[in-house]
Each structure stands twice: as structure tokens, then as C-alpha cells.
Length: 258
Image (cartoon, rainbow, N blue to C red; front, side, top):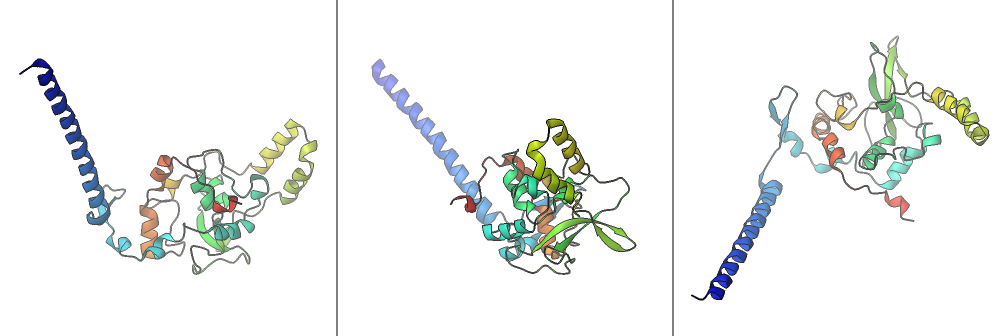
């Protein structure tokens, strides 16, 4: 067999081999995706003691019952912002802006969670609980009612004094903050620095992160926060920490389109 023909056959066989490997790889991925989405079944959740726990009752729930509380329309978010913390006077309606990978997740929580829930400096030995309080009346909720998670309330840290809940998100130095905003342009850098220390002196430099709440036996007791047993288990099982670390895109809410 002539050498040019032999080389041509070898080249053709090599190309066929490469195409075969690519085809098998793509077929494997396709089969895996079909298995993941249609045949895998319940996912095992690894608990703190290392034992897998299959929570089939969560997957059996109608989707709206356990996921609607954090997938919301712009109007719902804006309604929460209107009754938001005094922190928003300075930090704006969407206060988290530095970390582009997680700011969308954090801002999506800011309208129904008091800033102090994640940013308050906790004193050693002080027991803190977290409860829902109505945005308008200030009353503690006894039941979650509303659509798409629009409960008209916020999760607030509290301590108890003589069996009465004391909210830890009460405005501090409200008059001082107002005066500062009115005179900010006339203040020196040192005066601004001292004002910032006074306003933020109760806040921690290491705020709470996603996986400190969305975990079994985490900071938030979702059952105590009036969620059903199934919803509470779902909120504990979703790996928000991993989700935040792997997000690569940030999407602005639709309200910015105009």
C-alpha cells in the first residue's frame, strides 16, 4: 500500500476515534442529566452526626408551599422596603453592594429580615431568639399569612426581660442620624469617622452568612418562626452557602428596567 494512502487511512481512523470519544462523552452527559432530573428520586441530606437522612415528605409537597417565600415579585420586595430599617436611610434600598457574587441573595433577604438579625454584635451569655413582627403594627405574628412570602413582617432578634420580648432592632440615635444626614457635607473627615463609629458601635464586623441559618440546628429555628414542619426542613436542607459561593452572575430586579 502506497505511503500516502497509508497516512490518509491513519488520519481518517484518528479522526473517527476522536469523534467516537466526543460522541460517547456527550451521550454519557445526556444520560446523566436525564437520570438527575427524572429518575434519581429523593436526595440524601447529610446531617451533623454524619448519617444520611432522606426527607421524602419535603419533595412530596406542592412547590408553592415551600419555595414561594423567597421567590418574589418586585412589588412584594418594594412593599417590604417601604417599612424597612432606619439603616436604609444611608445604605439604600439594596444595602449589599460590595460582593457581586452574593449581593443579589443578600438583598433578596434584606426586605424581610431586620439588619440586626445578621449584623448585631451578640453579647456573651445573652440568649437571643428570632420572631416575626408586623411591619405596620409592630405586633408579633402568631401565624404566617400571605402569598409569595409577602407576610408584611420582618424577622427580628429579641431578648426576654421579665417574660416580655424586647426587640433588638429598635432605632438607635435616630435624632443623631437625622442631624448627621442634614449636615454631612459640612463635616470634616474625622467628624464623619466618629459619627460612623457612634452609629455602628453595636454591629459586628463578621455578619451572619447563609450557611449559618440554612442548616440543621442553625441560628434560626424555622419551626419557631411559624413555618410548617415540611417547610422548616426544606429551609434547613437547601445549601445556600454553596449556592452563594458558586453564583457567577448578578441580576438586577426588573424594576430597574425602566
